[in-house]
Image (cartoon, rainbow, N blue to C red; front, top):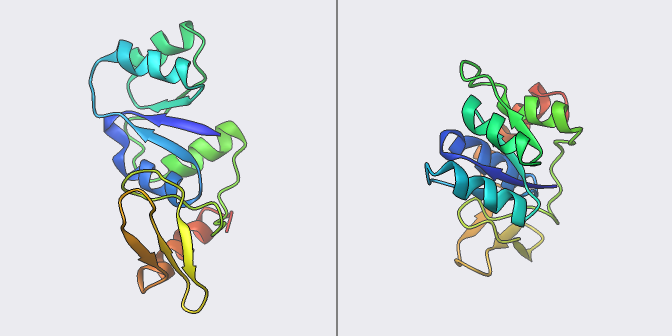
Length: 140
């Protein structure tokens, strides 16, 4: 599944990419530009903007409208609405910065490198928090 996320949901972008979903983050406030890109790239639009959601759905874009007041469970809401599993697959994980699929560079310790931007990632102390969040969502 491929996503397009509007400017209000930056944290969700990082999570979806980490979990292996091809996710574009649009900082533009031009609704038409967002809708056209979602259509041309067959992406699911995720937004908190009611007007954008209504306009995109009318044009045939699969759209997930999140509650603007609900800032803590947006990942779980997207997963439930679209039937998406939230488990981590280290062979599918993507760069949180540029969305490129990461390449594993070592097994022990596990490390990845982004072939596009060159950033390096590994399972450090932050990994406990990632695991805890996924476990709390009931999908880890």
